[in-house]
Image (cartoon, rainbow, N blue to C red; front, side):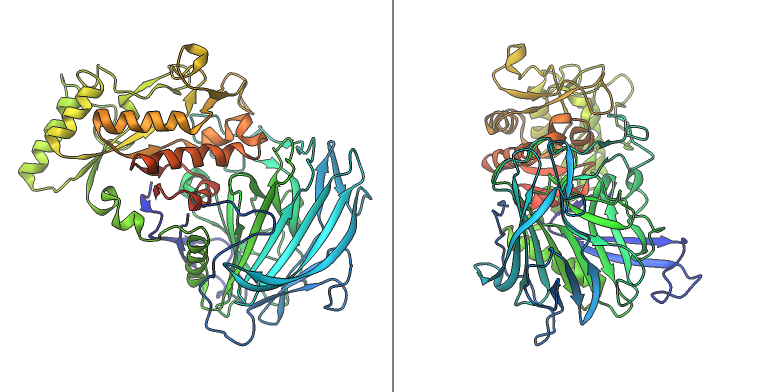
Length: 560
């Protein structure tokens, strides 16, 4: 796996021998796409979003992107239809709005969703500057008839469009019936199919039609998805194809991430979630449509809830589009872009790893424990002049449940380090190494839990979505994380906390999928406690949504 700093540049180079994109690249050539992403990091925007001014492109007179609503380019009532126009050419056309309520799919076409009003928007956002836009008020006609507000804002900077959803009342029974376990992952193992998903969305806006003739020029797409944000099993790379060819499948689903569209003239757009990153999702289960909104696994949408998506454009190539999009998100959420490089010593200097693939991964020297083995590694590095300054301790050092490998007690095993935590402290003292310490998903029987005599409340699952034999838990408050990090820093010198197995924890925990707030709360509580205790966080085995959520969490300095 590739280890990188969240505030640094991630370069992915994909070489594909698949069918090349006609008129974008020469036929029978290798398709080489070099993408530069600056990954980003902090407060959830409310209702119709706020942000921070993004780097403007070179064009200063004509906006790169504008939105044309239904009718004759005016802000008429219409039916919520719109087109996204980039440098004078239509790229995207809307494909309706839908909402699930009372276990029913509500759309304009089936008569269960009606547009009650629309109005122009115009004003100044304190971060993004002047904007114009439109607000549509929809109402479901089933059950208690909740409203759904959808808004589009396009900004004076000319390269940003925001799409928002807002729910004044609770939306009940919003879950899609789209769970498919036939090719799902098994928690604790890697899947050969990154499409474990929950097809459909609880709410959808914006939606974009995919069909020949809509875009006024040829467009290619690149979709990030999967484990390590890098496709099936983290080793395939992004998904590539032609936008108007529905045979070039978009994955969407719970493992999907940012989507880029690009032409042959160097104009590129990045489409991604912009708030509530752990709750938003993309869906392509309707083959001719690409829909964005709240993930279909959510059981209900609370009153006052909001989600946003961004369409960010650059006319300086796909690399610059991703770089500028990343800079926009960093500034929008007030995350210092250089912190990971300047303040995290484990990013700055060479370290020694005992992770999967390392020689001493669950494999100490003969007749020695890991404590003695790592002291020998330190002695060898000194004799050979290898300047290790930190050590990654993988999952072999703490207590786990033998059935599912979930965490029972995050303390050093005495058969690994003499005296447990004291042995870890001595290792740090003798080597001078800073510690990056691994952790994974929590057991339903963790010793910290009040249900088994511990002091802290946990959120419990009954079973995983696709495996009734497995169930995980999560700390229910920031108080637990404060305790955990304070104990680890004081007793044995924790420096960087590695939260591994993020995808099984997320996809394997029913409550994380069904509660629209729990995923964000979990990571925010962890991150705040880490900052309070001067601990850095590394995300590992992350999905794109985890990378995006880190924009709200200053403590996250690494993604792997």
